[in-house]
Image 1: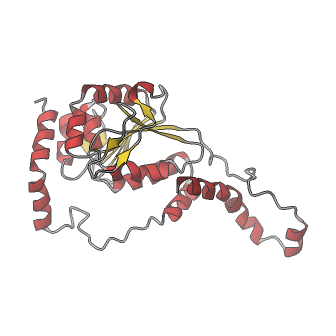
Image 2 (image 1 turned 135 degrees about the horizontal axis):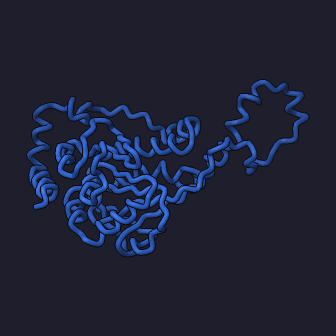
Image 3 (image 1 turned 120 degrees about the horizontal axis):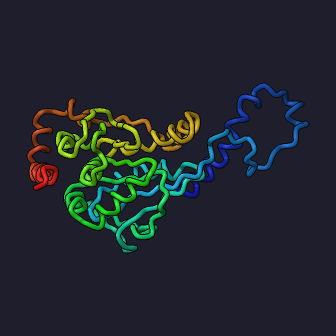
Length: 272
């Protein structure tokens, strides 16, 4: 689907800029005009083609949608190169069992990055926060990258790497209150940008983050095309996805279910 999506976007570079002019052109003029080949890129708006180098981090037991949600949009930015980096070239299993093949190892990661993006998880995130090799990579790549980002509890990893100090940030609602242990100021926005650091809230907010980067690096028309192609217009059958709207009983159930995770994150944040 990625190849088809890129082809669709390539065609848009020819179609969209000419729609307004086409509407004002008479049929006689249109007939006299020599049509441009479908692959012609001369009508592409300025700024639609980029050259960004993007690295998304893989670690065992990450949450798959934290990675794939933004990847859908980031990989649709024409000219951008998206690489998946892990400790080794072995398949990395997500917390739902989906296995992802890395493109590069941490050791082979390009020195110059436009974007570093870290997904979240639960037990996998805790393990990553305590893994010396993973944290060393996050610190080094994060310091060099033009933009450092996370989805969901991935912000905890950024925090443990010292990349959230003095920044506004967000995370999954269950652990947002712990960000202050890593020197961050908590924000309730779904996508939070503070300087070079951009954090997204829980899981599905990664898709909002992907569109956020499209607006930042391309323009509104390009981003509208991506949203339309993805048919991204959520109408969930429940409002419980917002913790402020979720039934108190449901919220308490989730709090109790993940109490152990919360306590372990807090211990790390306090240096324990």
